[in-house]
Length: 109
Image (tube, rainbow, N blue to C red):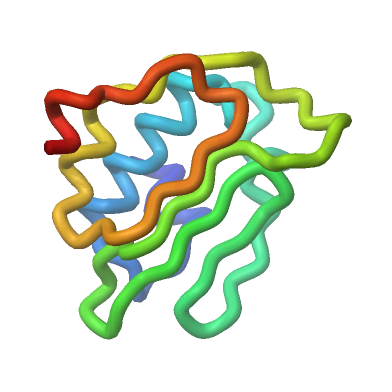
């Protein structure tokens, strides 16, 4: 929870931040022992962006767009299976993933 409150914007929903951070940890997009560097983010209005992940929020703080990974060749992210928890982002309208081996299709329906 400290990651959610200390590093991600206050205006974003705490529930969505907790879900998203959990996913980033599971796919090893961020590492708990190097979180300060991994969460060196740029927050501009409604968008939170890093080289390896990003999200947009709506006026209520819910995540509406999520990107995990990057399409650059030097992306350090290992191939991963997207956790089913992504379906818990109720207001998500756009999902972009790179290096993803599988999506939780049943949960996303």
